Image (cartoon, rainbow, N blue to C red; front, side, top):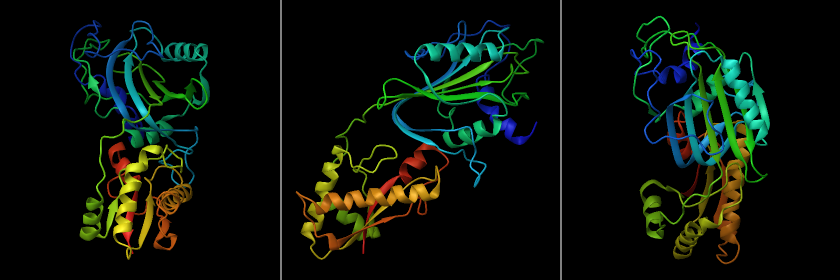
Length: 341
C-alpha cells in the first residue's frame, strides 16, 4: 500500500484502537454520544467515535479536484464557522460499503440535500488532502471495547489495513443563507482486518458565536504597541470568507479609536492576515479588503479618525503566528493587526 493510502486509512483504523476479542458483540456507543438530529445512522451501526465543538472553524472540500499548484490541497475550500459534529460509525457485519453509502445518499436526498459534489472512485488523494487540513479524528472520544476479526485474531491499531480508497460527498441541508453543511465519507470496501465498513460524518451548523466574553482595553493596545510595535485585534469579527465587520466588533473599534485619539501623532498600518487554506491571490484580496473595512469604520462616524493616519495592507498567509496544520493554528493566523508606522 502506498504511503498516502495508509494515511487515508488512519481515521478508519483509529475506530479500532482498542480492539481485542469480543466476537462481533460490538460494545455500546461512545458514552453520552448520540446521532445528530438531522441524520440518523445506518441501522444497526455502532457509534465508534465522536467530537462535538459548540463553535469552531471547519474546512470542507468544495470540489472533487485537487489544486494544480499544490496537489496536496483541494480546490475551492469551503471555510465555515459554527457548531461542528464529527461522528464515526461502524456498520454491522455483512453490510457492504456500497449498501451503506447508497442508504445515506437516499436519506439525504429525501431530506432535501443539495449536493455540491460527490466522488465515488479514486478519491484517496482528495480525502487525504482534506484529512491533512482538517484532522477530523483529532480530539475524538472513542468507544471502549473489543472487536474480533473474521478469523478470530486480535485487531490492534498497528495492524495493517487495506482501506485503499473511499467515497466522499459534500453538500447542504436547509434554507439558503442558513445552510447546514454535510460531509460524508465511507470506505470503498470493508476493512480487511475486521470485515466491517466505517463511515465518517461531519455536520457544520450555522451558529452565532457567543460574544461579550472578551473586553478590550485601549491601554492593552498601547502596551502591545510599546512592547512589539504591533498588536493583534482579537475583537474584530468577520463571517467566513466575508469582508464586512460584524456588529460585535464595536468594542474593539471603540478601543482603537480611543487609542488613536489619545495619541494624535500615532500613525498605523492596519494589516489583514489569513491562513494558508485556498489560493494565495484570493487570500491576499480577502486580507486587504478586511483591513480596508477596519480603516473605513474608523474614519467614518462616529469615530472620524483622520484617514491619513491609517493605511490598510493585506499579507494573506505570509506572516503566520502559528502552524497551519490544525484548526487552532489556522484560527490564530486569521487576524487583523494594528502596526505602528
